[in-house]
Amino acid sequence: MADEPAPPTEALDLDDARRRYHFALAPEDLDRLPFYSALLARLEADDVALRLLASVRVEQRNPMLVLAVLHRAALLGHPVLAPIYEVIRHGVSTDVDVAADAVVEVVRHEPEVVRAQLWRSTQTNEPGRSAVLQAVVRDLVEPGRTMAVVDVGTSAGINLFFDRLPVRARDDDDPLTLVCEDEGPVDRVTPLPSVGARVGIDPNPLDLGDDEDRLWLKACLWPEERRRHQRFDAIVARYRTWPATTLLAGDALERLEDALALASADDVRVVVNTWSAFYFGEDERRAYYGALRELGASSNVAWVSIESTLVAWPDLEEATDERRRGASQVVVSRPGEAPVRWGWCHPHGRWVERLSRT
Ligand SMILES: C[S@@+](CC[C@H](N)C(=O)[O-])C[C@H]1O[C@@H](n2cnc3c(N)ncnc32)[C@H](O)[C@@H]1O
View (cartoon, rainbow, N blue to C red):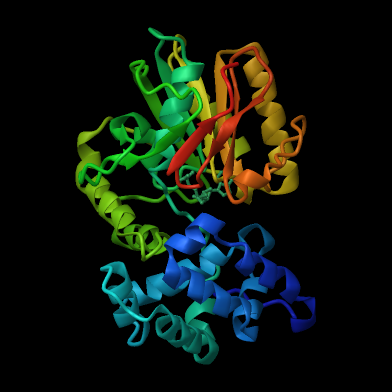
């Protein structure tokens, strides 16, 4: 896609961009990720970085896009960025303030490195969310029933394999293991339902077998999180041995019916969105919610939504819980029932809290 012209300077909302950089990471992640913390603090204070973010189309005006674009340039061998990110990715001890200063110098003096790639979308495909999906699915699908999964905003479809990844409370050195701490009555014991159709929808489905797509997926990972990189590599090495998936190109509402039609009649059809409704326009989100309510009321469709608290669903009270600042809200509906809040989780599934059994 071509480099889109930036909007006129006077239209840019730099205060909004500053806030977005400031709140890009949850407090717990700021502590865990000293390099990204230092980098975001500098980007928030840099005029060029503010203008770059403010120039992005609103539904993708996410600091993670700028961070991923910089990471991609490093992975492609940018002479300044490559050695810095190499050290960070390998966990070699380094002065993160010096490293972050050097990255911001690149942004300031070579803004084209970032600007030319801002047409992209944040497409982080986070398998950690499968740990949350496993817990919720055990709740929504009665034992003995089979299910189909429709993942809306699927990226490369990694979470269509949600049942293939073991979940443990502690790391066991297997990169495929998802490490997730459970709070509240989370079921990790009942066998998962067997899964028939696995269908993803995305305006730009990514292909784990394609070099350019894999590069972007890697760039969207945070360089300090070695385990996520190892897990991604392990999934790439393994996914062809897992059950087949179908990825449909298009928007959520355009393809939802096509996707549901691929399930067999007996399956509970579980529609999932994880950090994708965040990128819908306001009207699309409302229409999507309406469609799911209607489908859930009249057919065998359940819904699992794992999204930022900034995603407001029409009939649900605003999700405010200061204790859970930076967390994702888990909303579900069972066939025939209205959506309810199920609980909270870390945006990458590092912990999950179930509110209470409903
Ligand atoms: C941050 S990624 C999340 C991917 C995946 N759900 C996960 O949790 O790993 C957001 C995805 O939503 C997709 N997306 C954006 N707008 C969409 C829409 N209107 N309908 C369906 N998917 C959309 C993007 O292309 C992107 O792949």
